[in-house]
Amino acid sequence: MKDRNILVLGAGGVANAISISVATEGAKKIFICNRTVSKAERLADKIGRFFPNVLVEFRSLALEGVPKDEIDMVINCTSIGMYPDTDKSPIDFTGFPKKLVVYDTIYKPQKTKFMKLAEKKGYHIIGGLSMLINQALYSQKIWSEKESFNVFKNFEKIRRILKKYVE
Image (cartoon, rainbow, N blue to C red; front, top):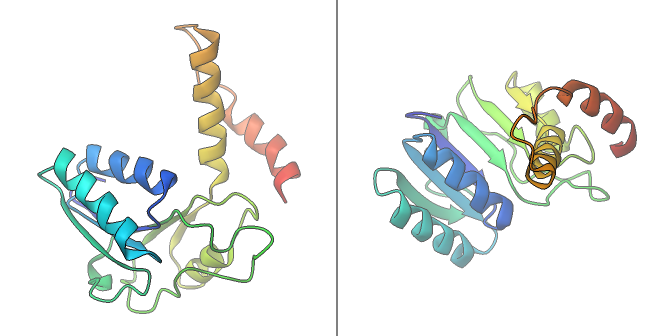
């Protein structure tokens, strides 16, 4: 994330956690875009206060004023495209650069319309199942109180099992 321009779609709890994470990792600029602009503004103000070295801006989900051609990563933290409304995407990727990482926090369906549109453009896509698994593994680590608990030891095995149940 260091020195990257990140576009975060959404301004709820997941967007809050992800915005803090990318700011902590040294993002250069974060654009927070949401259907309710006032929520995007509140989150942008919060991130800006805690991370003064990160440039943070807010916009509507229409992305007006976002320099799309300068974005390195788009992270969907909205519920748009989640089961059962799987025929929707928060954006269409018009105007973005040729090289882009696209992450969708939704895990059902495993490949959302958002991800399919990104894949058609040749972008690197990552689905939300990995976030679900990591949350579960870190929770297990907290509750097991074992210092030696390795959250990555069985990640791939768990991912294969869960894939069967989230489609």
